[in-house]
Image (cartoon, rainbow, N blue to C red; front, side):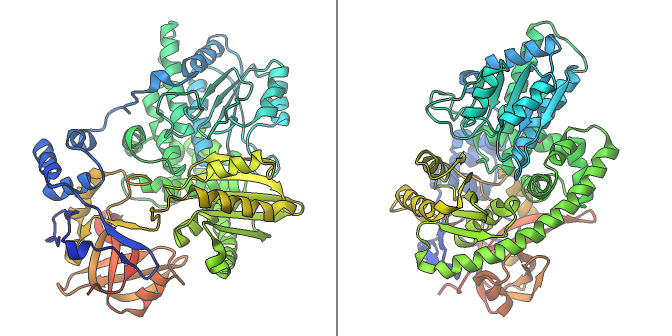
Length: 599
C-alpha cells in the first residue's frame, strides 16, 4: 500500500505489488505480510499507529508481546538464567577469590566481544579490591585463545584463578596444562561446544550440549554481565556490602557493545540488553566509549548501528593491525586523559586497517568474480600478502556483496589462516569445527555467523572442497537467502524525520531485527557521485516533487552503484534513518538495492 507523508507505512501491499521480483543485483524482493486481525489487536493493545502495528506483526511480534516490545526499557528479561550450567558455581569461585584477596587472571579474545567482556570483569573486580592480571593474545604471534605460554605467564604473576572470556571452549590442551599445574580456570564462552568439554573448574556456555537454559543467543559479553550479576548477588549473600561496588547494570553498555558487534540477533534477551545498554550510554556510560565517540566526531544519540560502524571498528583495529591490548585498555580505564590518548591511537590504527582492508578486498572480489558459477554454495578465496587481521572484515563484505557465505584465507609460508562469515540462515561454525575434526585444520571454531581457523597451506584445496560440500548440504532447498524483505511502499516525501522517529520505536535494529526497508517506486537519482571510500551519494526525486538525501554504502563498481550513477529512473529499496548534523536532525535514505521500474 502507498503511504502518505509522515505516516508509518503499512507492510501490507496489494497482490500486484507483492509479486516477488529480481533486482539489478540479483536479489529477490519480497514484501512482509501482516494478518489484519493481528494488526487490529496490536493497535487496540498499544494505541500505536496502524502502520507501526503492521511493521511489528510483519516481523512476528504477537499482539500480547507488542506492549513489551514498545514499552519502557527495563532490565533484561532472562527467564532461563537459573538453568545456565556452572553460572552459580563460577560466581562462587570468583566470590571466594574476592573475599580471600586472591589474584585473578583474565584472558580475553582480541575482538570487541572479548574486550568488552574482559573490561567488565576488570572494572568490577578492581572496585572489589582485587588485583587482576589481564592478557589479550596477539592474533598473529599467539593465535586464538589460551596457550600454555599464557598459562605460564599467569602462574609467574601469582594468579590463583584464571577466567577466559570469549574463548576457551575448545582449548583442550591448554586447559589440561593448567589443570596439571593446579591452576583453576573458569571458561566464559558462547562459541559452539563439542560433546567433550575441556578440563576447567567451571564452564559457562549456554551452547554446550547439556545446557537447557535456552540462552544460546547471548554473546560472551552478555554472559559476562550475567556472571557479574551473579557474583554481585553472591557477595551480598556473604555480607560484602562495599559501597564502592558498582551495580552490574552500569556495565550494560559494554554488554550491548559486544552483543551487536558479534552479530548476535537483536531479539529476546539480547534486544532487552542492547536497549538498556543504549540508555546507559546515553547517560554518559563508559569513559572509553565517550572518548571514541569524541575522536570520531559522533554527535548523534547512541543507537545500535554506532556499535557496528563507529565503536566496533576502532576497538577491533587494535586486535587486527596493532597492539591487541589497546581495545581492552580504553574500555577498562577511568582516566579521561588516558581514554582520549588511546582513542587517538585507535583512530590511527583504524585508518591503517581501512587501507589494508581495501587492498585485500579488491583482490578478493576479483578472485571471487573470476570463479563465477563455479563458486558453488559459498565464496571461498585464498590469497597471499593479505594482512590476517583484516580477513574477517573482508569476509563480511563479501557476504554483503554476493549474498553467500564467505571464507577468506591467507597463505603465510606453510600455514593457512582463515576467517568465515555467513548469512543468518546458514551455519558456518559447524562446518569449520567438522573440518578440524576431520584433520583438515589445526585449530578451528566459531558460531553460526562467524568462524576462524588455522591449518596447513598444503591442504587448502582439500579444505575448500570440504567446506563447499558441507555448506551445500546445509542449505535448505526451498530457502532463498538472497531475498530482501520489504516493509512497504513509500513516496519520497514520506521519508521524513517524523517517520524515522516512529520507526525507531521498533528498534534497536540489527541482526534478527533489520532496519525497516521500503520500496521507493520510480525515483530519479539526482546529482549522484562517488564519495568517501566507494560510497555513492545522491538525491532521490519522484513525481511528487519530493527530494531526500540518499547514500548507497560501498556500492562503487557494483550494479547498485552503477545504476545510481547513470541517473535513470529506478525502483529503490532503502531504509529511512535519522542523522544529526550540528544539532539538526534530518531524514536520509540508506539504499540497499535497486531494480528496474516495476511495470
